[in-house]
Amino acid sequence: MEPHKTGLKPTCREVHRLVSEGMDRDLSFIERTRMRLHLMVCDACTRFNGQMSLLRTAMHRFPDDSPPPLDDDEHAEHPHT
Image 1 (cartoon, helix red, strand yellow):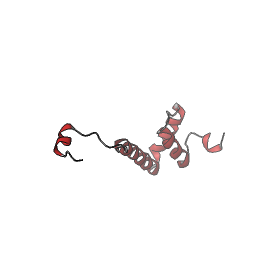
Image 2 (cartoon, one colour):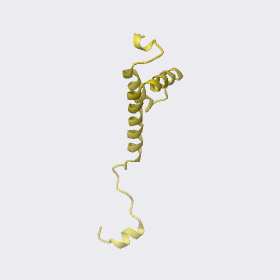
Image 3 (tube, one colour):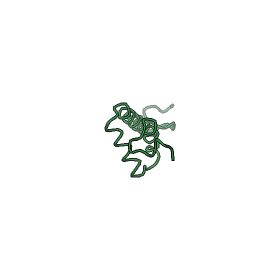
């Protein structure tokens, strides 16, 4: 095991990795606990965590590439489109 992962308080680099990985998978209890302890004392990582959450939320709200379906009313108003 790497030395920075054996202590209770992870490094900022490890927290950034955990924040990113936590977007794709469930973190273990120990990973979540270590990350939360670090976030309690590190404003920079707390901001990073918030920014990642904001980006994830924005991407989920971003429309996909497919065109929206036409409503019957819309089609009647523009018969040539």
